[in-house]
Image (tube, rainbow, N blue to C red; front, side, top):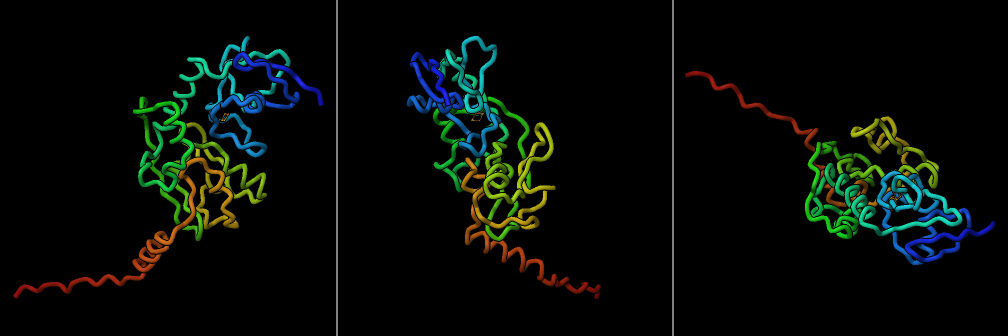
Length: 237
Ligand code: FES
């Protein structure tokens, strides 16, 4: 395989011709933030957090899916790039369940890290919030669609790495969802509880079921069997 040489932030970088701009930048020690990207697993250019300016291109380009070319000139840290990345994260946060303090992934969340990195102090866009039921029915996985950022990393891991294929996308636009096929509970599909989707999730949309969840399950289950006694009618004397 032959090499190509491009310029990234003024630095000449020589890499194999099958590299993406993101890989070329990383090989040169230049950081480009990402969210949906998982090397060789989820390279779909969905989130646009990794956008860069390419000389001659009319629009910003997602570096994680942009193939390098000989002579390419790339800028990864211009004002335009920084503003676009920040706007992308602000838009995600605008419909995100922002209960970070009580979230399993607090301080370990890639979305939270990006918000800190881009110095986001307030939510600029107030939009419709997702209000969906948290799926607690699986024996080992809790899925909270209100925290999902639709990156597709769990879907790719489930389908392409584990070959299970119980997670997928449904609907379009604001109604787009990631979850078990046919919008079922994880407990209703042939999930093997491997937990790889949890590892791949950048936020708190998927997590392991904890002991406290079993307590709530038990309470819910026992409530189903409570025989509700009705008070005898009070007769008028
Ligand atoms: Fe490149 Fe999401 S990381 S588009």
